[in-house]
Image (cartoon, rainbow, N blue to C red):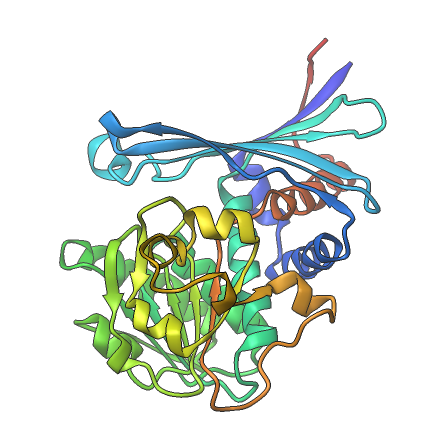
Length: 333
């Protein structure tokens, strides 16, 4: 039997953020309504190399979509090996017979579906009149998160981006790459401190691998929405836990979020409890729980990344590749 092999270069042109957001929003809803099988991520920790490897299987029953992703996180890769921090491979599976339909690079899929999840969180949890964005970190996730927000909002006035002092070149590259997407409607400003990025921002997105809080409680105003992307493993955190005590907290998945999301450290220390978490974002999407109910509320979405997001995005790629005759067929069995 033949399996379609798709490279990163082939996949990138196939994905539009608006289409990925639609697919991811539907996946959130299917999960909340009980039509998804998605065991928690399985971790292998490479302490010696400051990294980890995760396996992420899923099956969306009503959509007939199933996939398995294997993905690493090695923050030292860019400097030590000139490799991406995150590298992913996805196997799209036919649930009818278990046969692999496609094997594809998962880096851009991971980046886009995570950006899309942040966009969906903003759709349901941020204020509709949000105009100012504060980005903590200037890597790939800062790019796709902004892509999603630009897709969601008709016009953003200002985007402020901060990155560590050793990453100043990355911040300049970020501004240069993202400015054309703003079409002259949004000012993108590099700033010198996290505080400069987040004070008076309507939406804050944190995308660093930090293991200590970067965003202070005193900098956060009423009405702010915060999407936390960077904390995706035990011990990681980017927010002052005091912020969580003031906020309505939503996770993408309780089991994953409590283990490795932004709330994992405050939960372990007893600063917050499960009662502080309003629920899962998918429950809001499905209408099972309420999201933002006033302009004054602080909302926090803690994202760990869901296998179902990978599955629906991989299926989108597969269908587009078939339609456009893209990729290489290999004889697998």
